[in-house]
Length: 163
Image 1 (cartoon, helix red, strand yellow):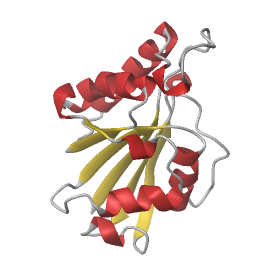
Image 2: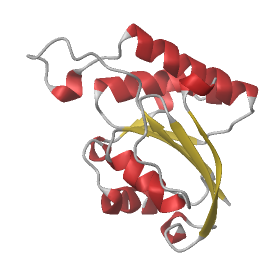
Image 3: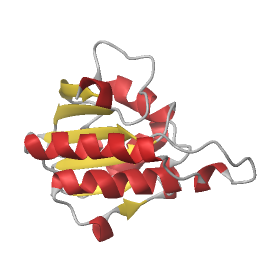
C-alpha cells in the first residue's frame, strides 16, 4: 500500500512584477495556512517517508513548514525542478523512479498540474486545488511504477478553511 499526499503550495506574493515566477515567496497568509496543514498532519499522525517539492521558492517554503507536521527533517526535502511545470505524464515518470521501500510520499507543487494529477486518483474530480490544499490517497500497489494501474481510495481532501 502506498500513501500519496499531493499538496499545493501556500499563497504567494504577486507584488513584484520584476521577480521571476519561480522566485515568488510565500505571503504571511501562506505561511499561516501551511502551518495549519502541519498541525493537521501532526494531530492525525500522518506519516511521510519522503517529501518532495518543486524548486519554486513558494513550494520549498511550504514544504519546510509542512515537514514539521510529518516530523520530517527539512534538510531531507528532495527539491526537484521537474515538478514546476510537470504534466500528469511527468508526475508518473517521477513517481516511477521512487524507491519501493518508500510507502508514504508527499509532494508540494503547483496548479493546474497537481490538480490534474490528483484527479487521476479521485472518483469525484475536482476543478482546482486552492493554495494550501491537500489531497491524500491510498494506492493499493507495492511498486510506484504500478500506481497508474492500481486501485485507490481517497483518504481526505483538506484546505485551511476546513481546519
